[in-house]
Length: 141
Image (cartoon, rainbow, N blue to C red; front, side, top):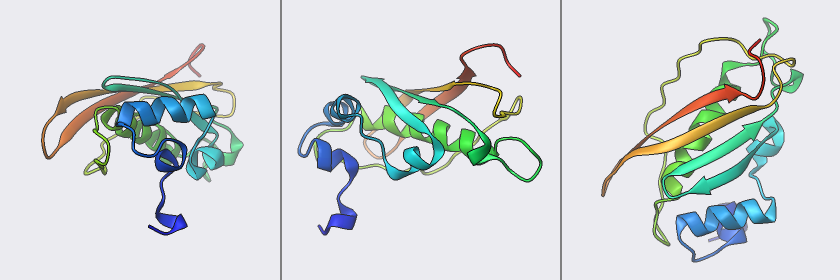
């Protein structure tokens, strides 16, 4: 594997199980480049669950003056993906096969911190299914 193919999880915790990698990433304060760009981080993980926290802001605005829906989708996809990652044995991998998001209200730079909580619904030999919700820390805008 060349340097561009090495994952952050393998850089921080090579050869460990998924949950061990996630906990090592949290302890090291590591986040992938997308988390840097979009201002969100993995802040919690356990067997079959993961928690991301972010601060939506103008850096993620769309042309109509709200946070782009892709920001919420990225947080939700990350929470679902890491929830599945927590169930993996050393050397196993995964990828998102499908993503569906329902938006109930807009995010803005006044929304404040948000939390994406992901949970594994089913975990099979070839596919896993997870769900996540995005909640604000304070009153909804």
